Image (cartoon, rainbow, N blue to C red; front, side, top):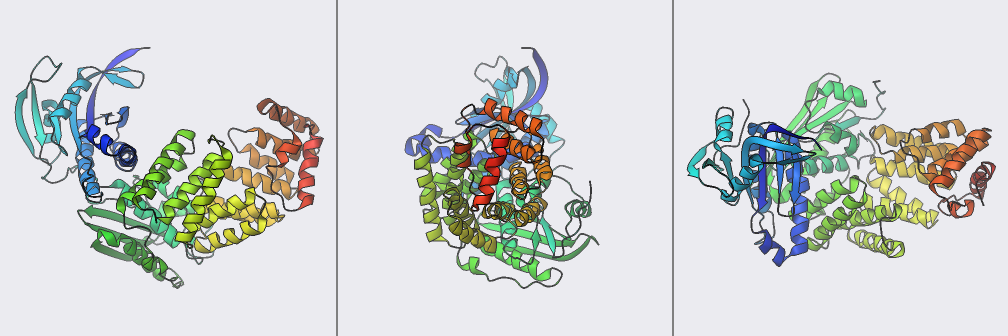
Length: 578
């Protein structure tokens, strides 16, 4: 492997008292550190153009293109950690020491070595808990670009570093660092996108908190059937980007845009929100909320109601039941839940397992947190669907138990009903699936996951044409939807006997598994393309040598026997074994 050299700003961070924290509560410490890394560290490193090149249980090393970016990130991270610690249970704060160096490094693969890295590590050891120490080279670069205060600690001899090094300590009490396609048609009903909330003051405090605020406002707006709300998945594509509001609205086909910012300091939070008519680029409404942190959920309700009451047509706001039914008073549990959701959405075995750890922690901190129970059930369900669990029967029992608990705690959580509907489908209990699906839709009618599931369930019930409309609506709500939406659409077209459109939908999936090839085999067979059908049948047997029509059909949940026989007939025509 080729070894090269380059100049880089290296940041070393280490958890203070890691061994003590682990001895007191190893599982809780690991979960909390993972939540901090996902919610705070990774977003800030990305924001300032850095990358993590080495991760340890008690710390990390990151590389930045400039010393200024590295110090800005370090200062923002220490501020965010301090704010998060104020929300931790008594006696459980997590502090970091950070060192930053600018120097020559050796590059081998994705890893970095040499004195440039070693010196950053030694500087970290000199820092106080919650503090930052930098080398003279970093101080020189930062002093002329950022308005920061440093204390000169003089020259120090550091372990395994040949020459004495002049060290500077950043004064954390000083001010924070500052730097000098086609356009879809508009829906009939009022349409809106909520752009990711920003920290507009320039302080890099609690990036995850702004993300959580954005997601919860989207969810609350989605409760209103009178609105067409762009999904969080699409909204977050614009995170940390400088955007033209009119252009974003034109791209997404919406009439209104919400922009906002969150500033959290100590026990208070300030949220500013503005509603913009994208067509005229005119501000319709703006408001600022300055509250004690424990009122954050009431703030979300106020923002939602104010926006809805201002929209064209003056839609009437729905009841304020959530104001009297706060999800949790424990912000540490909320922090773990947010991180767990992020990991869940990555859809791979390792992150699924990490998400479960965090959701377990959220529930341990607040056993009555309904949304955490619902998402634990969803994450276990993901492991069950993709066979990432050792015992499928035991996992399904856990899913059912988590949803039972969540439902008993909060019957108004749309995710609980969404997952219960999906669970009922797997047992062919179509009536139960319809009940929970309708409850989910009534609670959150613009959640793309709920909307696409409506199309999926209608297809199983024998109403594929209606199912197609709902699935297409889901792709409209979330233009950046997961690939599995194409699977749902392809199956709906197949059941509707619209074989050409079914084939086209499945072809949009990048990596086809044996189930996709089986549908393509059946669709081509019904379309009269026997050569293509047999080609896909061969792919099925190559990917799943033990495939049989009988076993495969146990994974299909058709209510109508005619739909089941139609599918079996296509598989047989393609030449797949009984």
